[in-house]
Length: 494
Image 1: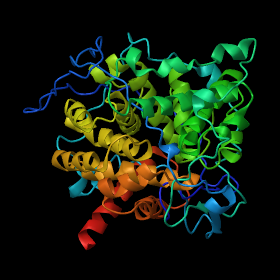
Image 2: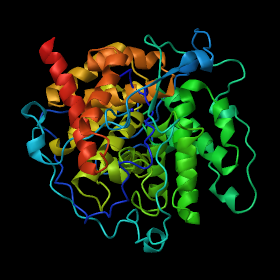
Image 3: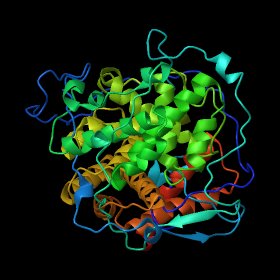
């Protein structure tokens, strides 16, 4: 998602490799949760006063968002920032999409990658849980045929590459923070979907309060601003937001398009238009945003909408997991419950999204993130580490020294490869957009041991190995495992 995270956008030709939405298997219940021996929580002196997370006895506090866009680098014009180069047809190579998947069958995973404690046992749905959806049969029966995939340019794949040595391009004077973007709230029914930016204030959410709070709250505001821009019919205004924050705004736009598509039974027309048009450089973030929409509608991805991209569509479960952790924290983090009606593969991607949310929940506090992950059973930690690596690299908020400590803790837990996989995924996504912030450039060597271009290249190597017809959840998991193997080979050869 071989120039680094975000270096490539796949233009699939004439629907090759498309897959219809799959039915969701029966629910599975996660194993009993016990805190690993010897793991102690840090004093909660920095927690918000009312913050006790149910079931864990810990309080939650907001994160702080550092405005990374306000650096001293000069703005790089769009035409100079990225170039494009053609690569062979879809049968010869692939383009970046979203990493993050390990083969469901144990036989596909190398010994070095096996997590201590094994894979979690299937969990069953909790029928009494209000977050579990009702059957949306009326929507799935009326979906339109899938006639589009994430498009960028012509049928022959085009890769938009970032510079070899990416530099943060600070926004010019005409770009604004998300809270300063003035949008016109629509009247009537669309106005009911309007989001108040105060929803993401970490204090009321009982997240941990720390130095990164301002940064992380600004990121969250960007998400809601992108959502409101679509609802207001002013999607083009998203590009007025600071470049580094724009990906989060497109994630919110993906949520808005999916919400409207499901409610108006268009089969995903708005989402496909966003992916093939204005949001073509942010395919990973937009698919994650689609998962938010399903969570808000109490549905499971991808009910009501046909597949948008055969492999990236699985990222909707990542966004689904982030949403559940963010808005149902006591249940999802405190009691460590996952959503029902998901098989093992979907739950693994759900946990990757939950891991991303833990970076926000603990306000980018590395020590708190480490201790929080230790509270989960070993069978879920691998995917949580993957999500943490993705958020730490893409979003930022921690110093290089702290990230090196995070990497050491993941290695001690036996999941360093999963942390690297999430970080490489973030690198690829940033490179595709052509905007690579300084915190991403600095985080990659600390977490992956290589520069951003090489880490992002692992995602391409693993994707090419899958061929151009990869579309299933198993394919997605093999893709993630392939990134981990590429990292392991690099360490072995060095």
